[in-house]
Length: 123
Image (cartoon, rainbow, N blue to C red; front, side, top):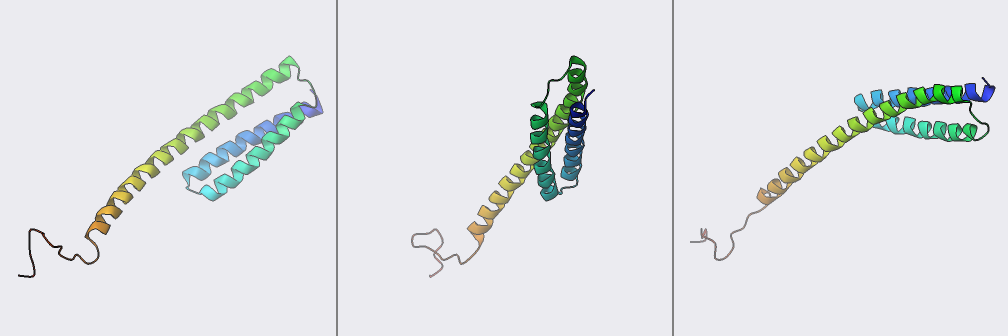
């Protein structure tokens, strides 16, 4: 194994750890920090791409990294499912708030009788 391979393996494991950390931050509803960690993960991915282009991997090295990549993909899918659930919940809450706002606006403020209404308050 080469030094580049060891560095690549460490980077992949850092990506996996960051993905798990993002999952935990989302569960704790710390979305700002999750976004920050997502930016960090993007930087790690850029480093991986750079290091991968500096040398050729042996078959053994490729199979070793493939296992870590599969773990990363599983974690990312789990994160995406969690975010989809959050998005659906937020959309449902927003829909309910919009309906509540419309009905509140309908009955708030001054309600003045209009000419030709069923009830003529002026009489």
